[in-house]
Image 1 (cartoon, one colour):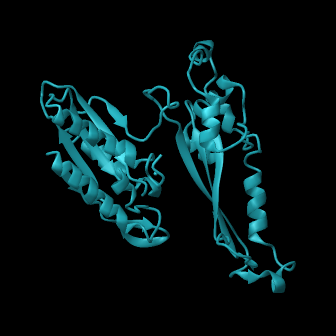
Image 2 (cartoon, helix red, strand yellow):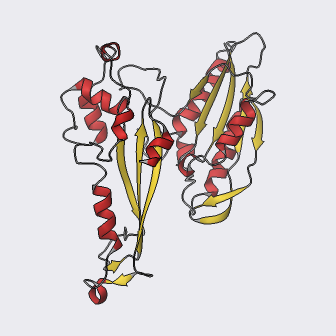
Image 3 (cartoon, one colour):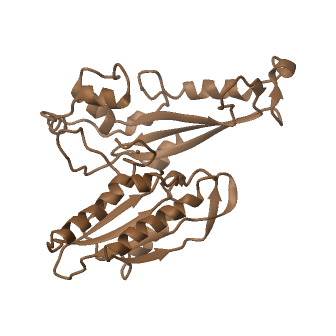
Amino acid sequence: LADAVSIPSVSSDAARRPACRDMVAFYRRMMDELGVQIEIRELGKHLCCGQDGWTTDPFTLTWVAKSAEDDTRAGYGDFPSGGKLHGRGATDDKGPVLSWLFIIEAYQKLKEPFPVNLLFLVECMEESHSQGLEPVVLKEFAMGGYLTDAEAICVADNNWLGVRQPCVQYGLRGINYFLLEVSGPSKDLHSGRFGGSVHEPMVDLVKLLASLVDSKGNILVPGVMDSVAPLTDAERKLYDGIDFPLDGHRQACGVKRLLHEPDLEKSLMHIWRYPTLSIHGIEGAHAGPGAKTVIPGKVIGKFSIRLVPDQKPEEITAL
């Protein structure tokens, strides 16, 4: 895992993008050592980091313990980047993806027969919206495709409730990602010379972003909460007795207090069954060290909404 984390593979970073192919090669070498059958799918060019002509990093398709008598399971993982190994990608998602290979290795060393078929679809484009994934999934899961025989799918990109016991997650919140662009001057300006005489895009963008969600996490966009599935008594009872230490969650977040503490049920519901709106960053603004007095001519705010049952992405986008 440490070797994998040391590879600075970040598909959304132009400087680190080439390392994604190194990560694919690393994973393939591990598979070769385990005797796993491998196929690579090249996916041509696409847009990356605002530039055309980037090569889409390849997908790796593999199978293990192929036998018509066994059940078939499909595993999918991605390679964000470079982890309590500190380093990008240690837990999201190089650790979980490599764990599948460690399981295969353990069975081999114990000389135990593998209980099921395993089919893998491994990609490293998650931080670039998994460009190329959808057509590969549609093709390979279709009749005659590489993954046609899969009877169940396991996404290798998740976490446990805590460190006291493992768990199996059977659902994920969806996501709508948005870019909010505000422009004004045709170029960046010096605040000492032009400040006070022009509309500043950054000021307007900050106001717009602040209008989306409040400091308690309440989504302020009208209509977003209207399509959330109602909470039933049966669903509420599912939260009884869940072993989820809020103190551990607080420590993992590095905060002194959580939004809904000490209410465990309410905290879990806001993690699992309610939508959230998060603001992720501003492109075009000065983000480096030091005091820079530029007025950006154009800024782009980035935010997302996590979707829950009964919410449709196209309807949320229309709001």
